Image 1 (tube, rainbow, N blue to C red):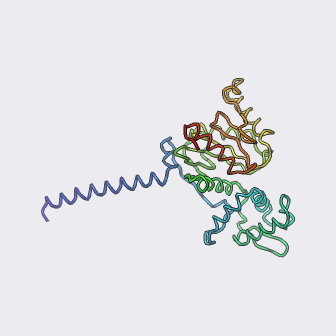
Image 2: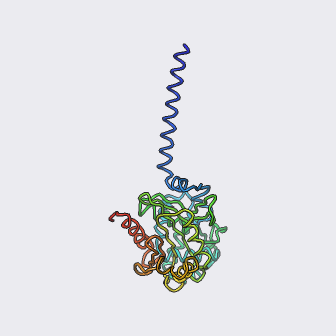
Image 3: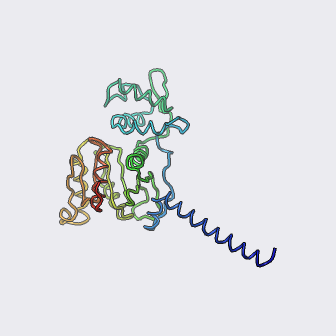
Length: 290
């Protein structure tokens, strides 16, 4: 082969390699929207979507994740599951505080099918016994809601490098190209501390999402404790004019908003419907009618 011919082939291979890399980068961008959005903000994701601390069915169970997701959409199942995780070994009566025994029997049978509990005489035992909190599973649920109900890319348990406020973000989603950050709380309002509100606001300052949601998985009133805590934290930061600049206003029911950018919500009457209110407000504020 002549030197001229070899040189021509080398040039073509080089151009082909460049084209391949360009296509790979474009596909990676489409597939990894959230990482790219955070990268443009100067941050690097080093961990996300870990099932390690989630109570979820093993992947070999047919349609296990889908069936578990449908169950988790029910508030009664979620609070039942919190008791299961807290107790680890329990009787039927011990996890029947919020639902009838008939309902709980159905829930326990379902967990057996998912291979998450086993029967030991008159008692039950949680199989993944190293899980101590419902928090990660709730994050998984919220991320899946964004994917399944809103067709939006979403990640949970996102760990980000080099943030000022600590790099743990519960759920980050991309909705219509807008960055949405959701802080998820599985414990009741009485266990929420002022520092957690401050940390949430600091994380907003870090990544500057288009929409932020403070989600308390409870049917209790937000006005009793959570909203006053937000008002107090805002007053500490911005002084006596905070109520004018950053008023915490009721949107509907127990959904509250700060300038239509930050939302405080619970799970009543329905977790998904409450998230819908937040997303609709975001899109309407950008001139998109839904």
